[in-house]
Amino acid sequence: MSLNLDKAESLCLLRLSAIGDVCHAVAMVQAIQRRYPQLSIIWVIGKVEYQLLRHLPQVEFIIFDKSQGWRSYFQLYAQLKHRKFDVLLHMQVALRATIASLAISAKVRLGFDRVRAKEAQWLVTNHRIDAQASPHVLEGFMGFAKAIGVENLNPSWNIPISERDKIFASQRIGRDKVLVICPAASKVERNWLADRYAAIADYAVSQGFKVCLCGGPSAEEKRLAHDIVAASKVCVDNLVGQTSLTQLLGLLKEATLVLAPDTGPAHMAVTQGTPVVGLYAHSNPKRTGPYLYLNYVISAYDKAINMQQLDPNVWGTRAKGENLMEMISVAEVKEAMDRLISDLAL
Image (tube, rainbow, N blue to C red):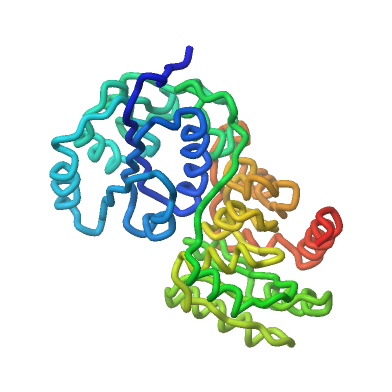
């Protein structure tokens, strides 16, 4: 049985991180906005994630800066102590989110089903979404929309890009066919090999593409990008560490095709309607892959799970190891790219 919010005035969403997850959450928020246009929506979000979504229409953001330690909880309480909401969507299973939720006053406190309501989330909620056997993260989030009476759960996204960021992206990409490679994930073992990324860059140029590398400013990301450029036989535009999140979003929108491992920019590209070839070995792409382009994921996950004798029926199981991405070959990536280009007439 779902809750009806036709008479409700305010909704608070608690989802602090990460980039990929907040991209999924946007689709849910905008599904709710279509069903309940009268709702005032306040989103408690992480500092970095806010930079990506700050132009989201008809959403008020309250920033939770975890780098402030315990002060972040007191700051959140100070911002919310005079506010009351009709409903809280508690969408993050993490102890810091459980603690943060105590600063939010709401009549209805909706969390995950009992199996997924870990890190004491079940203690601070009074309603639960329906249990789901094996959902993609996006589908799990849509369970919150379903629980409050939203029927149209087909995902769509409207994340505005400023004119300045559009101009930046257009100037860097132009009108060429462009393959954007976002080579680095948040964990180094999820990165593919530099020489194999370089081989794909060479192949893409032979097929008429311009190639850009994009990513964050960390030393590891810059090192990986340097190694890719050094191993490539063609000209590669290295923009790693040179863009803001919103500039990167603009680049991903202008791209023809994106190649990425299990990382936030893959999901950012999906929000902009840009096709993604995903590279997965440690996590199940059926759960965390680029949602609209799961048919073009190259996955060594099942092989890794079997090698490590892990139970494939435990949803969310992660394979461990530093060299699992080596199981993905250049030939497999070329085949997926060719198939995607043909299927979508790129």
